[in-house]
Length: 306
Image 1 (spheres, helix red, strand yellow):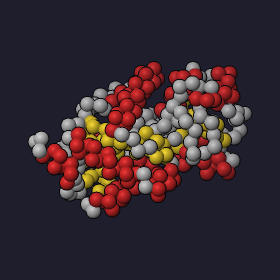
Image 2: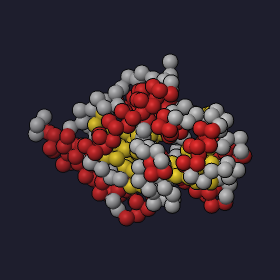
Image 3: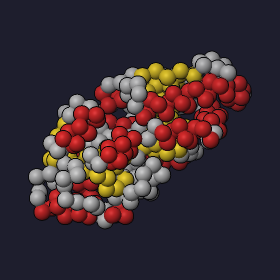
Image 4: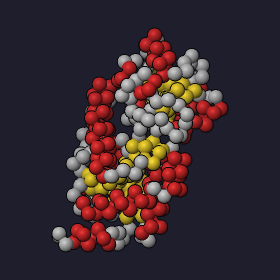
């Protein structure tokens, strides 16, 4: 085995590599996976295919990779869901023990946006209004645990404000609900919100990430009066636990090289994310931080599923 592992890493890949995505086709995670698959296929001369396994907040795809043979040929493109889903409902896999992190691909930012009739132009003004009118302001989401629900829960957790959640059947209808005035606030993805900011149908207040985004000229929520606020929507790649370190390192080197091609950064940004391309250890630290942060938010918000 000691002789096989370096040989296997040096020869990798010798057959088709599969990237599983726990969400439907067309979303930001799926787009990132397909961009990466295309680039790696060209580099390796071997097929890299994307397979979508949507459902159960990505738990179906995640469980499948947790059970897969740890040889580097079955990988998972994942998001905050890998840290959040087990905190909401018991799973057959553990977000750390069941996987080997490979790299953080990118970071998908969201924006806090409001209906233009709401008399606020900053996060501080939104907090003040929400505290003056507790339980009167609605925010729209596409459901519990979604990328537009969790940043709102974190916002309430850190500020002490109380907003009323309205669930819609998808992020698109949730944004329509905001633009119609049925909801007053939404934590929307940058790609979905910015066209409507330009048209004046919604007003952008801040980005949810810890650092300002190149995608839009807005301050962060943290610098707008909510210290410690950070929701960056990490998109990363993991392998099953016990995948040999030599194979993980080979995957990391090849994937980071592919991601750092000039055209890749632009395409990933166009999909609503910013390129990261990290080491395995850095991505592992990100997963650990997500588990710690969202565990607190989920418990306080009563977001667990029976």
